[in-house]
Length: 329
Image (tube, rainbow, N blue to C red):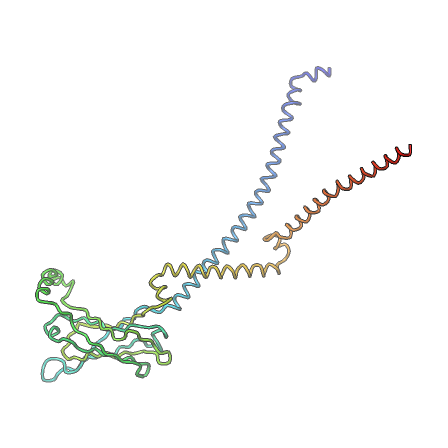
């Protein structure tokens, strides 16, 4: 009967095929599940650490950009200040025309100061002069300006010569013919824009900051549509680099800020880490667990090395005892 039971194909299939396969599959499933659970935990820890690192990196980057922007707006002055110049004159009583030099008072600012101290500026007067026969016959004339501080305190003055540009009759005829549609439609006018540079390298005094300018055309026959006073910053050194190479200077500035801010963050992290509780250190750093694991490994290695030594000594003592027994016999 026992032989028949063992010869039963269903029993043979169950004992030697199905059961081993089920055991193998179950073992593989349990191993895979255990590894998957460990992997999920490790992935969660990795995602948490990656999120923390991403937050810190983004914070460091935005702090570096913000620092550069603040430095740019503090260090860099306004490039150009434009003020309209409304010329005034004394008309003649007995004849047509102007009986005094056209002059104007230009208020640069109502505050205590407008210009950045230590920064050179170019100050020029821009005149819109029509190409009339009077201006052509005028020739050279003088343009003078005075810079004054609050309360009318004199700071500096300058005078420069100017004149309308000469154009021959042939040049004027060709230009009038070509630009006739623009002149007739009012898009362009027969005028010239004269730039008179009054100060080439004006530096504002912090004790007497300039707040007003007085402009005068020293000619009674100069005809103008209007004029403006331009105060332009003349950059040199770092300001020149930051203004004319903004992308390169921004890259260098943000990279420098990023380096120092990262260094401060790293030093602060290690400094604060010494005062954190033990469970936080284990959570984020994991250094002590590694040290204990490493110590445990060292102990195991020592025990594995010492065990063969004790076994060899026991065998040696047994061999010596047998030799002594043989010698006695």
